Length: 92
Image (cartoon, rainbow, N blue to C red; front, side):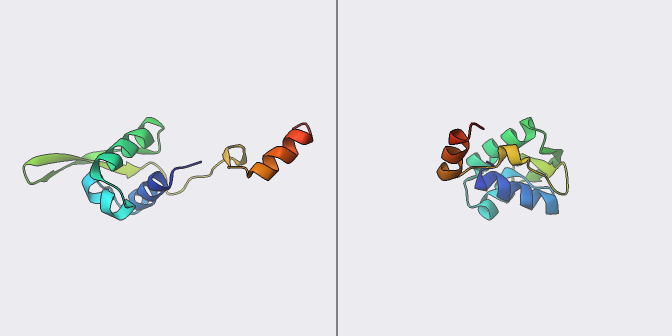
């Protein structure tokens, strides 16, 4: 299942490109955790680099979502323990 922080980052990046520092407050996390999650999303092809911006004396990497929306396969959907037990019992 998609982590809530990653889901929020993706939702924000569908609107406009952003950096870890820009997105962290909106996603309710720290800049370091936002950066970590952005790298994971990039590794899986859900976000891509979208330039850089100067902020103070630093250069920040901007990211953008690679699609306007995403479809999650039902096979990846979380199952409740009751559904999982019923499916095991039925031999699925």
